[in-house]
Image (cartoon, rainbow, N blue to C red; front, side):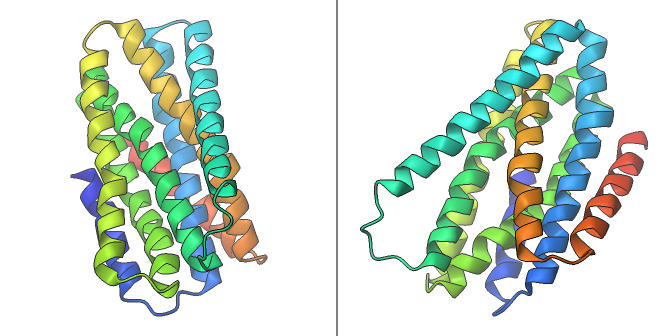
Length: 232
């Protein structure tokens, strides 16, 4: 269900001929603020309630390292194909779709593990991830469409990138049923992966797109709404 929301964002992006950098910067920074709230007030506290701090730190570090490895893998893959005749806008869309497919897995892992920890946490994570999947779908589909890719192909790649969320949720539920320590590691792994995505991708990209205060406003608004979402 969660990845359907990302597809909705992709559909929105397909029908916007030109999305302003100011708007894209806002929604990316909003997503980053929302994710930071989930990390700080849901994932980490829940993991600490199930295991000691050393286990949680190890899980966070593994999540960060895994995302760095995936990031380097994507960069290497594209640097080996520089001779391909592909315009920069389309290439940006493809890189974003690969990155989203990679980071959707730990998001799914977080949802699956979250439901094993508590229904409230699982629902809260699902809602938060749904909200930030809309701007992600837009940020993927807009450069692809404006780069010359057919709409049906854009939607196909949006759907494909969302499938990993379901796979991650499946494995998160299975792994989480083994023991509380495994749940804690899964939750902290997802927190580490999200932390890297926020600090290494979303915030830098939003600042590149627009230099004004809108990105800061989006970040703070996302964080505040995230606080509200994690306490209801």
